[in-house]
Length: 308
Image (cartoon, rainbow, N blue to C red; front, top):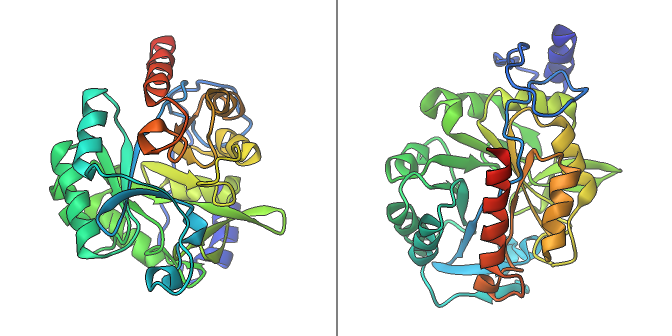
C-alpha cells in the first residue's frame, strides 16, 4: 500500500523522484483510536501556542488575506486589527514567564526592521519560539543559531504553485527534520483545502489529505496551519479544517484562525480530538481584542494537568 501511495504521490508532486523518507509503520503511542495508517505519536491535550506577528518591525495583528505585494507598496488596503507599542521581545519575555513553549514569531515581510525584531524575540526566549517568514536554505541555520527552536517554511518549498521536493530535501539535509515546521496554511478550492503561498494569495496544487500529510510528515517535526478564510476576522474557527487535521495529521499540528471565545478553544479540543494545538491572535486582549490572555493561559495549564 505504501508503494502505491508513493508512486501516486511521485506522479503528481514529485516527477523528478527525489528520495522520500516514509514515516515508520510501527506505532509507538496511540492516544486516540484512528483509522489512518499514520502513527499518532503526539500529546493527547490541546495546548495554546502563542504568536508574535511582526510587520515592518512592529508587533501587529492583521487580516492575513489582505497582505499582498500591492499592500506592501502602499497601493492597496492592508487591514490591521492591532499595532502594539510594545516590542517583539516584550511578548517573548511574557510567554517565557508564563511557561508557554512552541509559539512562533512570524515576519510578515523581509524588511530589516522585521528581521531585527524577530531576532530580539529569539534572544529574549532562546529555544522557546519558532520563527517563520522568508526562511530558506541560506538563512535557516542563522535563525536556529540565534535561538529559534524551529524554522517555519512555506513559500520556499511551495513555490509557483508547485511543491519543490528538492528544496524540501535540501532543508532537511541542512537542519534535520526535527527543527523544521511546514506551514500548510490553506484555503478552500473546489471543496478541498489547498495549500496557499506567497502571502496566501496563490493556490498550490497540493491539497491536505491523508496521503500528502503522511508524506510531508516524514520531512517535518510539526505542521502549522492557518485557516486563511477565517484568519484575523474573529468570526469563529474553521471546524471542518480542525477535524481534518485531528483525524489525519501524523505529527504535532497547530491550527490558527478565527478563535474569538473560550468556547472556540473547546471546539478545537473536541473537533481535533485533543491532537490539534491552537494559536490565538487578534482576539486576545494583549493584541487589542476582548479575549483574556490570562484566561487562555489558565485554560492551557488545565489541559496540561489533565494530560499528566
